[in-house]
Image (cartoon, rainbow, N blue to C red; front, top):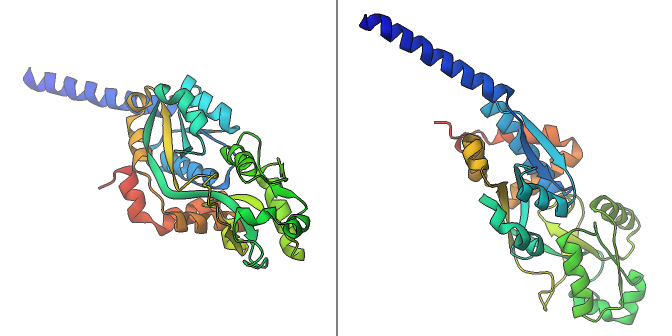
Length: 288
């Protein structure tokens, strides 16, 4: 009788395990949101690859602008995001929703926002944002700062910098792609320009650029990029939440991977990064 009950119990346990596995396989995908920034695209696609391959969980990537990204996580429409630039860049967005989300961890430290110029512009001409006020410098730059999308924290801070430094300049609102097109075209002809920028970014691997000083700190100081999740996500998807909380990438290796993505594709760059960092991946997924 005991043996019979043991066999029945074992069978029930196995059936339950199979049902749980099937549920995980057929359950709702994890929705990870991201805005069209190249660093966010790489780490988001890296996480998605690991979640699907190592944890067997489906992932749905949701691309949107920064403001609806924060709103989506706070409402629970999006499970997680991996690009919360704090404490300055996304301060306004985060303040509105901080009580409605959980912070899973910091994926990289030492990120930076600023304005850059090409190295062929002598430092004696432009070394600081203050130098942009010189009449001859303004003329060569066309009185413009090349910007990105209107919803970006960098855009808000750049508008503040123009006011703080009393510059008679126009911030050209565009997109990351539009800004990079202007940078590429200008670099080819050695035309003077100043552009909004941030690190990590692959453009520092392709072009010889330098940040100019910001003595008033209008563009903020060094930042950390956090992973945010909707309330309840850690309970609903503990393994995925644990993986995301363990992820940590150094900025130099991230910029190298981002440059690889530009030369090949993000998918190939992700595969290369995983193959070259097996110990790190094991640590992230909790493999022994």
